Image 1 (cartoon, rainbow, N blue to C red):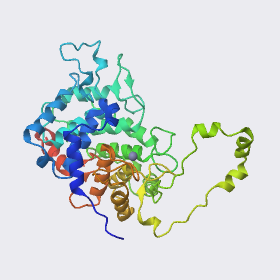
Image 2 (cartoon, protein in one colour):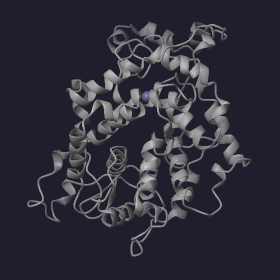
Image 3 (cartoon, rainbow, N blue to C red):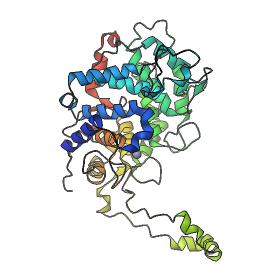
Image 4 (spheres, helix red, strand yellow):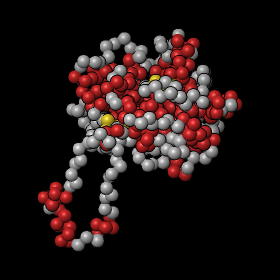
Length: 412
Ligand SMILES: [Zn+2]
């Protein structure tokens, strides 16, 4: 195999441009997710080891102030400032128009940690009390609290992961100063997560749905956060040797694929279809003809196996972000060595690394913040030179996590 080249300087340039100029107009619809976009940008520069070279202390302080500006008085963080109508105009009646959300809260806290803030201005007690209001009877978490106190947002593993992560960051080792704050129901949360494991070993968004690598990451991420504090016996799904653990690992390893989605044939468009006459349409419904018309399945060759990324579900093509979701989960399970790191590296560097820096979702696609960050992190797990090492659950540099762990109240 020839040596694929990691264009570190171009990635730095890509992130610098994302931080200091306007994002492309395709991001307009993501305005309410600014906290997430900020996370990818700041965390990307941090993983590249240039956050302090590319920004001044005043700029970093400015980012910290912006994040605290997104803190909601009743606890938690909003995803952007667009819903904030000012503290004087905020009332209990209109507060639900400007809610804190679980993902924004987790990302706000992680960015503060990366920027070296001590979290002293975070409303810890209020935030953890708000978190408690988001847990449902079945143990799962919602996203926001609605007008009548109802829990809104999907009943799925994403919010469970962000809730467990937020609790991990804010409780500290022993919940110093939180003696009067009721904790979430950890046993019920674990039971909900375990119920999401499907027949094939992967985890789905909720019980009885289809396995999905992103949600599998969320499940194992949540359990990792919970287990770091707990002396209880870990759930079988994260206990080596159990059927649950081994089938999960098998499913994750099977996500590595040399199907890169490069040769997907274009589906006929609707207007083509309407032009078909009736007899053609009837003919097209004949099953035998359809089977005969299928292209032969080419066996893999030495050439075609040179690049192998990861997919998120069975029978799907590779996608840059799944190189992260799968390898991060395997890293949390201490089974990263079971996948082919060299072929994943080649896939990322030769197929989705973009000429101008950053990574696209698939072959030939333009870079975006999400796929760029996850491409970098997947490479970092395998020790790519020029990248800082990454904690797979916090999805940020070990340097940042060490800063959190060094805070006096976290230690206490
Ligand atoms: Zn993706």
